[in-house]
Length: 112
Image 1: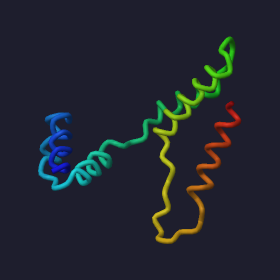
Image 2 (image 1 turned 90 degrees about the horizontal axis):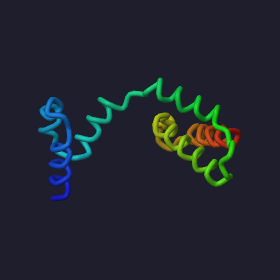
Image 3 (image 1 turned 180 degrees about the vertical axis):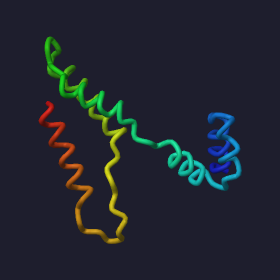
Image 4 (image 1 turned 45 degrees about the vertical axis):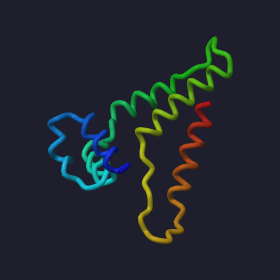
């Protein structure tokens, strides 16, 4: 029942031009994966804009709390646009995701 409700919700909010391409998908997960594959393209100009905003972000007259909140908002928005690759090997022990995550956190710390 929940699957039907979510499918209905997705079908009611998407553009009618896209509707037919996902209308006959059996599950919400399948529908979502199809839409994600189709529309989750990196927005490189936005990524550049956010990185520039972070590089130019200064505390100025802001108190430390407001400045930190401003940085966190920029970091969060950037993290939504930059996807960390995930290793698909079963039982992978290479640690690539952890290393990449640490690198992003160090970069954020340097900005702060």
